[in-house]
Image (cartoon, rainbow, N blue to C red; front, side, top):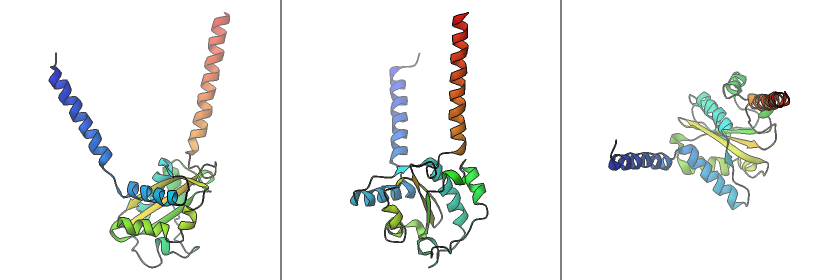
Length: 192
């Protein structure tokens, strides 16, 4: 039988690892905190982290990583002149998304050398992206970064902007079907 000291040592080491992980923040978390502070200063609700949008943001940032930062990339892009990604449907599929559940969201890429925090934040709050950040219809965000690129995706609470995986609805209906069948099976067993 192990001594109580060994149990205590294991407990302390486990808790220490959890604290270290929770203290580790990255540029995505820092940016989300900054965006939420910005929105709160405007009396808007905070954006919640959306893992599915984050997946797509990571994929998009990976696509942008080899593009240099110029005066015509990221937040400086003139609307309508953005680079079109021919593999966008593949990126959506990789994150279990499709066009119908991402249509109302907005993708906002920014290129900032070394992803300097204050510059990254101002690339979103003091650019053409601020109009979207000020919009009350956006409830969530997914953020991904790669090299000098950071991508923010704003999501809505509508089906067309929720970034809910396309197979989640079928999973829910399948679970409902299973419960219904179990109910009928148990009912039949109780009757006989």
